[in-house]
Length: 456
Image (cartoon, rainbow, N blue to C red; front, top):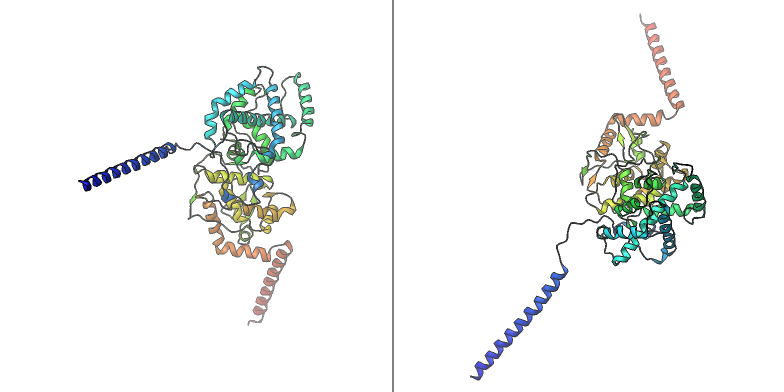
């Protein structure tokens, strides 16, 4: 009997142990279920630049220096001075329209309704409560809008519709001279760079809603026009980009990218890894390819190759766009799979054409690169560093490179280029060769006559 009692106690203890284990597991399962959920399709389009694109010297390329926009760099000590400027600009924007009046309440209520959508636009977690997030959006959005307005007024392109506004315009110009941002060239220059950074963006619908609350409808300017007017000096195009009201963007960087892309049309591209690159500009020139500045183009990316061996490239200006704007455009395309790789493909093509300062000099002499004469080596280094770390599935110049390479492999084109380079590279060389041919013909003719004169 005693043995049976021990067996019963053991069985009871085992049952208790099993029950305890099940309770612990149930609690763990419940805890895991509370943390996991089916993730909805991502709506984000504002990212932090992946570390693989960064080096220790790239902080100025991807991180703001004087102003923080959005949550990623919000609250940093280095931006305290600019935060004071934001307060002044919010005041000026509210005071801008006298009839109908725009109140701070209008701004707050409008952004409060958009808060959920705005949060979903950011790929990284946002550690701000509702009030702090809405306040940040209002301050940052109003700051950008007032900056665009003030810049337009300062540039003298604001259209006055009646004489009554002339006094206001004169007062506005005077106030801009006293403005710590508009009154200093370097601040405007630096702001452009900060406001095109991928990590420093606001959803465009936030800006559009604030713009609709503040715009003076008699001016006839769209937000799209204000943005392109302000950022034209930093774009790589030699001429100003024309505003197209049909072009939209998810944020300012995306809008500028869409203005640089060619008009919507079916685009053929090569899939990795079957696409072709091409040789450097000097190598191509030695095999007979000629370089020409393309005129009357509708896009910076509109590069073509003709059957007679002319590579036509739209001219571009080398400046801050190459060290700030283009790297962030490439990062944007790298972060979204549904984006075309057109800007990245453009830079890859230029990277294959430019390997040294001699390549830059050749393209500059052809009128394709616009920049200071002593920047040839700087341009080459900058272009070669743009695509480091980029992975491209679709190369949009595969067909063009294929045609260029086929042309260079033709023996006649190569020999013609050698003759031209070695024997016809100057007018004197051409005339010397022509004189030698004439002398050879005369000598041959004289020889023939001499032979004929001796014949019976």
